[in-house]
Amino acid sequence: MKTTKFEIADYLDSPETVSEYLNTVLEEGDTAELIEALGQVAKAIGMTKIAEQSGLSRPSLYKALAPDSKPQFDTIVKVLKAMGGKIHLKPIKP
Image 1 (cartoon, rainbow, N blue to C red):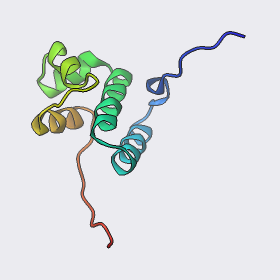
Image 2: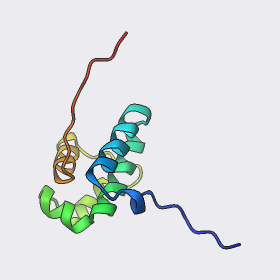
Image 3: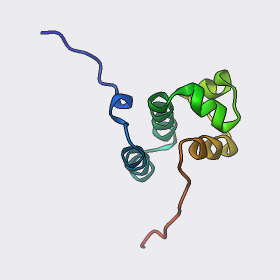
């Protein structure tokens, strides 16, 4: 039996799917998982496209979305905008 590595980026094929994926990670994951998820979405959309639309260089984008990286909040906002998204807060019920 031959198996292949699962790549979530292969399934992030619509803005709705990307949004649902990132919202789930925001609700259930931690910071490292969010950075990884942003990297997967950037891979699905295209690193070059995200780099151009965010105003970051490709090397900077790869560095910011690498495992164990700690990108600045401004970088996260730029990447989200380039992906067609934004952060939206809602109250947490006590």
